[in-house]
Figure 1 (cartoon, rainbow, N blue to C red):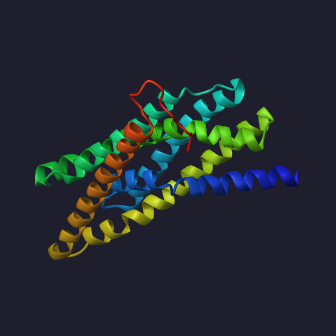
Figure 2: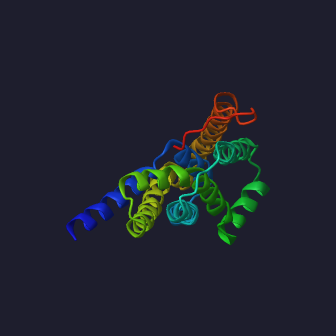
Length: 223
């Protein structure tokens, strides 16, 4: 019982840490830099975590159950999809902010949560193999490995909810201040967009050039 509780606690803590991976934080920062509410920012983090965890459970669970080997080109392709998402989010934040566009984005944010959920799913696709292979190396028993995936996912959801809440703090406080300080909010959004764009381009180059995504024999290490 003690070892099971220890494994569960470790899985939850590793899930919390996983939420702070650079590509994850960059992606949600680009999204929550538009928010003016802590509640909606936390909701974005939770939705991202849910999308990510569902994918890890499905794909990672299949790897654990059936010992599936992910082909290098498929693994690189999934990571390239993450790079594309980061680039698109970056471009979106760098576009000029007009009154109409700001109103449209706020209405969209209130209406649904498809964007953070989809981004979380894509990140989960790219990271499922690494998580599952790490678990199999430590926990060979299938039932315990699946349980560990579930706890890991819960930790990721909790971690990303906290991360987005903290990341949104400057934007939320700026939105409640004077017009002069609101310019700071626009600066945060621009910086988040530039960071997302640059990070996505670097990641895409690494996958194409170093990983050889489009070469005859690509090389890929799950991470």
